[in-house]
Image (cartoon, rainbow, N blue to C red; front, side, top):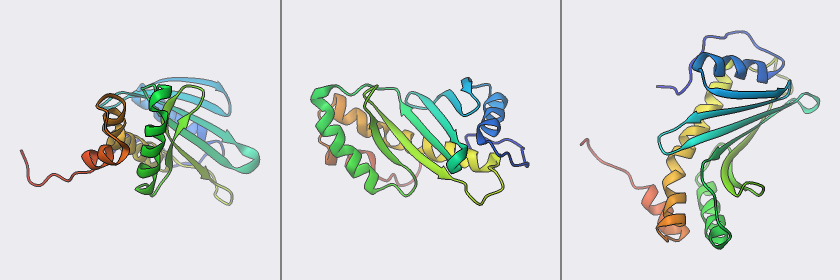
Length: 167
């Protein structure tokens, strides 16, 4: 089941308008500081996520981040950088990086839309679904490094195990 699902077949030249409709339908907390920016907060399985959308009309690009609710201390920065590298090798859409201002890990992707006739709700739903799924998938790896003292390889291996059968 999709995290978000909104019936909005029409396209908009400003994807922030479409995303605001999705946010409104789900009653998520948000702040639209301008026509080009939207901040959204949602609760996930492991933590709260802060999503940030920025639309740049001149290049027809939607910049998106989804920040994890955790701080990385300076003494853990090198281990987290190693972890980011290993995680990003497994990513096929977007990537993880550190927000230098907030010292938080975040998922990031930029959607280029030149030549499209706008962005629809389904495209934005997919963007949010994938980002939150990846954040949920790798959140434990960050915790293993920050709190359990695992190195990056151990954290990824512990996170990536496959379960067989049902409990």
